[in-house]
Every structure is written in structure tokens, then in C-alpha cells.
Length: 289
Image (cartoon, rainbow, N blue to C red; front, side):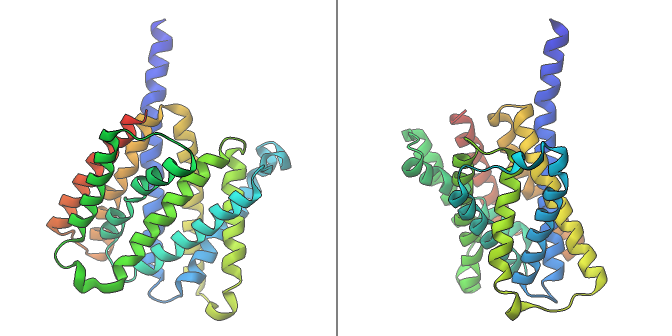
């Protein structure tokens, strides 16, 4: 009996570790895009990132059960996920041109709060009075993170807020699709639809890329695809209440990348807002467990 308990404890520990690693992959991709967006259009970079995911997932299909692994019962919902993926990728890339990674992530962390609001209507999930207070507290954290200098930032601040909204819709659609569609289908179809949508803009945004930059973009595509795989795997290793809070490790990774690569130092208001958002977000996740 002690052996099985130890194994269970080990799996519960591995789940959060996989999620933390997945978040590292996502932030590393965004750091690559932040570097490249100074020379290339954000739509072009997002197209390359999504195309890389399509190719990589298609390559593993023969080892994941064949074409049946790509079966989807919700093509329209998957198309909606693809639109959200393309939107959030473009918005994140463009925002990173003017904003530090940490600031973008702190504001974008409103997405679980937005997803909770949408889930009330779309999924019919009940929300208690305590959960409403946590949602309101999370949005208060966003306003703190924006800081007193927010008005001077102008319309740029709308980009991470738009990303948070897109991510919130994406999370709800993913939960709807997960009822029937497998993880390989989820990874493939959203990236495929995003790639097709972004391809429509290529005639206007196409710019030849240097081989080194192409290699960096492809490496970023590998990272984010691997990150999505680790994310799915994490939820099979441990309960949601233990895994989901690890999403907020993106704050740590983005701060480290921002300082080491771009010399960005988060402001006191950003740190304070991040603490409030993370506290409310973790409490909200655990209240739904």
C-alpha cells in the first residue's frame, strides 16, 4: 500500500512540475517573438509560429493512433479556437514590441477571470458569492498592475486586455471541445485554422526572413508545441487544483527573460498587481476544485 501512495504522490508532484516547464516554453516563445518583431510584421511571425505547430503535430499523428487521432466532433468550435489562437498570438507579438513581457502577462492574467464569467453563461457553471468577490478582486489587481502611468500608455494597453479576452474565450471553447475531442485533435485543428486565417494576410505582410531568424521562429514553434503537450500531460498527472495555479509561474519566467534579455525591470505597481491577481486566481481555481 505504501508503494502505491508513494507513486501517487510522485505523480501529483510531477504534474505541477510539467506545468511550470510548459509555462517556461510559452514565455521563451514570446521572448523570441519580442526579439523578432523589431524586424518583421507580427502577423507574419504568428503565421510561422502556428504553421510550425501544425507541421509538428501532423508529424506525430502516425505515432498517436493515426488519422483517427485528428477526429473532431466540433469543427466550428475548433475554428473558433483557431481564431482565438491567431488573435492572441498576433496581439501578444505586437504588444511585446512596446511593452515589457511581465507587464503583458500580468494584464493578460485576467483571462481566467474572463473565462469564469463566460462559463457562467455558456457552460452554466454556478458562481458563489465568494467566487464573485475573487473575480472582482482579480480585476482590481489588473488595475493596480496598470499603475498611475497607464493613461499615458494609450491604446497599447488594449492589446494585452484583448489578449486576455481572447484567451478567456479560448479556454471556454477548449473545455467544450475536450468533452469529445482528444488532445492531438485539439492541438492540430486550432493551429490549422489559425494558420489558414493568417495565411490570408501574407500578401500584405510577407517579408523574406534571414535564415537565422527562420531558425529562431521554428525553434519557438517547437517550444510552444512541446509546451502544449506538457500542459495536457500535466492535467493527467495531478488534480486541476494543484496544476492550474502553476500557470502563474509565467510571471517569474517573464520577469527573468525580460531582465536577462531585454533589461526590463518590473515596476512596484506591476508586482503588487501580480500578487493580487495570483492570490485571487489561485483561490478561484481551488474553490472550483
